[in-house]
Image 1 (cartoon, rainbow, N blue to C red):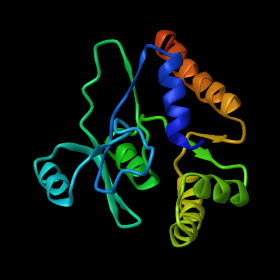
Image 2 (tube, one colour):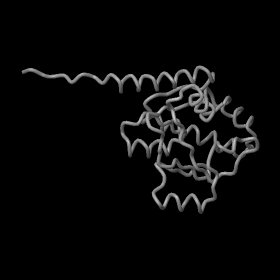
Image 3 (cartoon, rainbow, N blue to C red):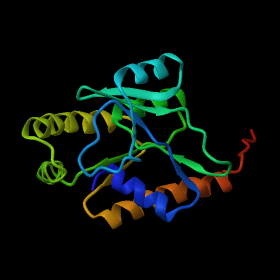
Image 4 (cartoon, one colour):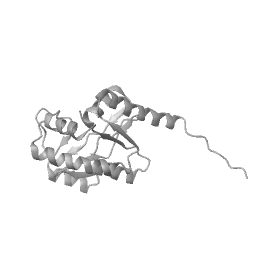
Length: 180
């Protein structure tokens, strides 16, 4: 139960959220929903990137991932399910973006999840090492951190963050005046 599962649950529960569907050059995993990504080859990805078609993109463990420029339906909030390098790019373009860092409860749990989805030993080792680097880097700019220990709790925590943001948008702080 990684970030994709949390994102799917949020979308199911909140009709005002819109999930941007990322592109990737990696191959589809056995049993993976074909709608999880737009699966493309490296040439297609690079052409889209050269045309300025991505909000963010990153290479992750040899594969390219990118978020097309979002075009959500009117009145919907955009949810991005992206890696740390991509989140850094989004914050550079949109400093007011909210970044929720979803972390596993432990390395052991993360390893079990990776093995459970069929990843081989070499990929598991690379992913665990990369994950530790990502967590350290993302803590510098993430606005919120959610431990993904229990799926329902993690989904509820992220939903609470979304509601907090919506509430702040509906009820902006009143301007203050200083009288000297």
